[in-house]
Amino acid sequence: MRHTLYIILAATLLLVTTATHAIEPLAVRDGKVVEATTGKCQPLTGVSLAWHHFADQYYNADVVRTLVDDWHAEVVRAAVSVELGDGILKNPKRAYKALYSVIDECIARDCYVVVDWHCHNIRLEEAKEFFTTVATKYGDKPNIIYEIFNEPEYQTWEEVKAYSEEVIATIRAIDSDNIIIVGCPHWDQDVDIVADDPIDGFDNLVYSFHFYAATHQQENMTRCDYALSRGLPIIISECGGMNHLGQGVVDFEWWGRWTEWARENGVGWIAWSLSDKVETCSMLRHGATPHPAEGGWGVHDLKDWSLLVMASLHQEYILNNEN
Ligand code: MG
Image 1 (tube, rainbow, N blue to C red):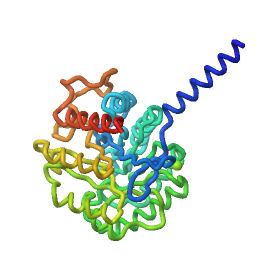
Image 2: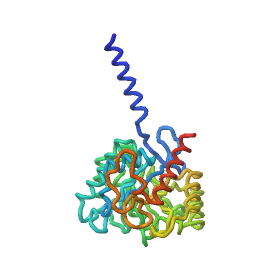
Image 3: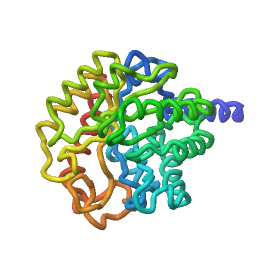
Image 4: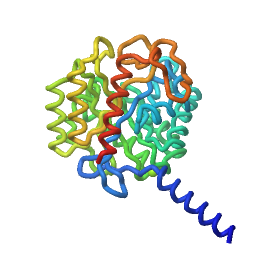
């Protein structure tokens, strides 16, 4: 009898644990990111790590834990440097080590993770090889979101589209369902152009728009409104409160307008970036510990920008849990 009781208790505990911690697979339906099983709109909000080649000291389990537990990030973005410095083309071992440490901790903590090919140029064969490696290793995990082209610079949509179709086909041959983020021309600004000619033939695609609130304002919002009116699914896979160079002062008014716009339209956003570089958009003060203790970084390590991001993520968390 006692054994039966233990078995029932253990089974109940397992059920509760599973129900509490299982992460929902995502899908894209009717222009929105949704939970695949329930259809509930799931606009993810979170934080992007910086280019790994200068900030991979922050690509670790303690940072992911802090972002998830203390900042309420629902998604963490790993920005895999491609061409610059000691990026993946030059040093693949370092890149995969950093990326996998973030992915593994996101999986352990039921957090979504954007695997970002942080490149400004078309590197088709290298991208296909990279996403083949990642999809083969992690494609069965619902946590993974592929971002196949961070910010196209001067390429036309025709060029970006042709590149994207090949990379998407490569991923889909391995992973049939996880969400893929497609880049848009001119640093992810031209969502209106893409909305008139989206990619056909693949499911679960979402297109990236990036804003920096002190630079990108009404004209960009109007372009996003147009894209949404055409049914284009959008995610803000990178954004900041300062100017497009990551510098200057934070524009609180337009940061507020964009995050409100995102919430009203069911669009997710990911703030740039978790690093200690001396620039407005880097969230930590220079030399901030890469291994924050329980409770996260102290105020002496945080900057105005990280405090604003934390406040915005907390607001999303509160609003999401009210409904
Ligand atoms: Mg999959």
